[in-house]
Amino acid sequence: MASDAKGFSKKDPVVCRGLGKTWAAGTSRAHEALKGIDLDVKPGEFVVLLGPSGCGKSTLLYLIAGLEDVTTGELNHFGEPVTGPSPDRSLIFQETSLFPWLTVWENVAFGLSIRGASHAERKEAAVQALREVGLTAAMNKRPDELSGGMRQRVAVARALAMRPKVLLMDEPFAALDVQTRQKMQDFLLDVWRDSGATVLFVTHHIDEAVALSDRVVVFTSRPGRIKTIVTNDLPRPRDPFAPESEAMRRHLTAQLRDEVDRAFAEQESFGA
Ligand SMILES: Nc1ncnc2c1ncn2[C@@H]1O[C@H](COP(=O)(O)OP(=O)(O)OP(=O)(O)O)[C@@H](O)[C@H]1O
Image (cartoon, rainbow, N blue to C red; front, side):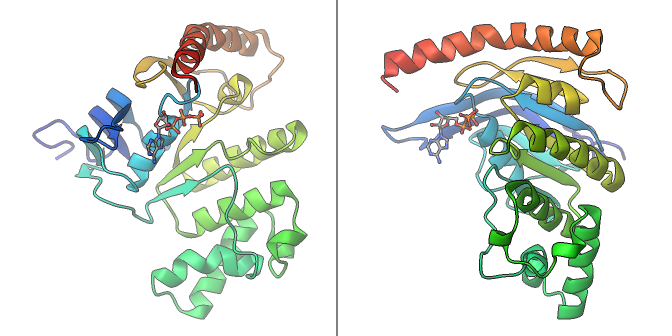
């Protein structure tokens, strides 16, 4: 059966139906971060989440990662409700939290020890993942011997070592300089193509959304709702200077502008 009685596809890695999240629900500090999110993410899709600051993009990734409970609505992963974290869904943050006292390969293998893999299995999986990100030569180095871009590649390798079906990436390249960020985008597209993983990627950069996405989900300001979903059919590899890329950037900028203005106005009135 391809879908259950509620219409949740067993093939789709992420399905949100009427999903909402209120932080500190039921308290005087209750804060509605997301409201009425309906989103079906297809296997192997690259979905970019774009929206004003505070609209709930990170919150949505935490929910999908199973690190937080949804408040309303439903969230399914291959037809099953998300009830907690799973190695199937890996989250990568802007600032990588590598363990400074472990080598690169030990950092990559760390999650596998929780799964009970042997030393030899962990090392083999780590070396394979490091090969995928082009870092086998650095496997015995410590994180502080690496550049910021290399550390993010280690973070991607650590996620890949778990063979996740879904990679959740929260502004993973935001701390990198422009040139390194572009290289990391190309690198990520290679990893995505080779791994077959589904990617949900949060960014503030419209050029990054145009370069990477199959679809761009644009959020309203808080509470975050889906304002529009833009399909990005530009052929790959993409030329950022092509008129079609420029047209896509203009379209996304227009979609985002009102929401960013609204978010600013709200933050001023909140004194934030
Ligand atoms: N752990 C938390 N407890 C309470 N409120 C939270 C928590 N995490 C986020 N929030 C609030 O939820 C709202 C959405 O935050 P979130 O970080 O998801 O937005 P975002 O779109 O990712 O923002 P940015 O683009 O600035 O990173 C914000 O108002 C934020 O203050």
